[in-house]
Image 1 (cartoon, rainbow, N blue to C red):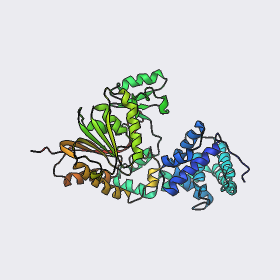
Image 2 (cartoon, rainbow, N blue to C red):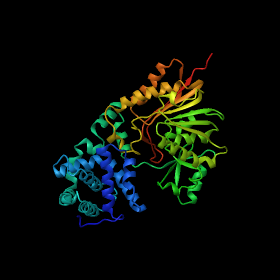
Image 3 (cartoon, one colour):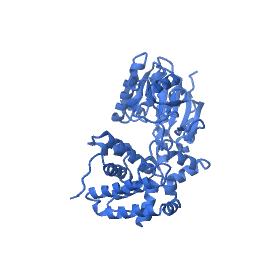
Image 4 (tube, rainbow, N blue to C red):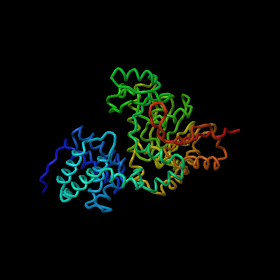
Length: 446
């Protein structure tokens, strides 16, 4: 039985929980958000919950550095028990020299050792952990230089992911990887029915917060805050949504009274944006009933800020099988935000490169083709279909759109942003996510 007992306010408690979260991702293929939800269950302290989430995301973003250093220092490709691998990687990633360390170095060492001592399976490894971490501190420059010889430590994503990006974007892949390791800013969409981004900046300033306008309805906060601290959030005046994602709803050019399909709708950010722009009848479709509950919650939150009662129906069914969900009445507009690898939003979901496999893009591309063909059959002549993916791989963007256009003789390609790479703008360091947009009109019947 362990002689060390931890309480939720201990950093070692948060380190153990974060390491366990990372283990779920690396060995069991669970998403970081799902793994966090599992590990946070039963944790009552808000401070502890925040620390666990912060450490888990930090560890995921810098996993390559931590793993490479761990292998160099222990001279073992893998440690036992398995939980020791993410714990050591997390500890070493926290010690990696940066402009501003999250914790003092001696605190990290002590707390990682305490975490080992408090866990029955790790107690015997506390000596190894202590020796390796202190060894790293004694010779940090040399260890870092050795680690940087390994591309995994330089870019913090698996080798195949680096190669796929380099092949797809030979001039930009390193910049894309650098963006993926950055902390994402908090970008908001101001409800156009409530007011303008400039008006919202005034509301922020009244609460001692600050931001800047980065899009027609987009505001980027200087410092992220919990949504409960956002003025007007509960009243539906504002929603969290990246500026690149905010292109979708306006591109549909909606008119009041239209019938709209939001395919693959969860979590509902774009659904809400659609309802903010026009009084339309929306069917939100998603394969998961559970995820559709988030769509409903998002729309219910913004509903009080709308001048009309939102007309929204939800249906849990596969988009590629319209016989399960379509009532035969064609849609005026379709938002096809199809499933993809998520390669354009890695900075928000740093687990993506670790969860995906080399064949995923091609496999998802086949599903995307099926979904688009099915949705096209439900669009009325003269209607608009907007293809959206948060991927920057060609198979899930330009190649997909061109193939769809070639297969559908009645598809007229309209102007759209096309491929948007993750990038930092020149005005203040706002980093936009990577997306692809293609827009098609169904030829009117003669």
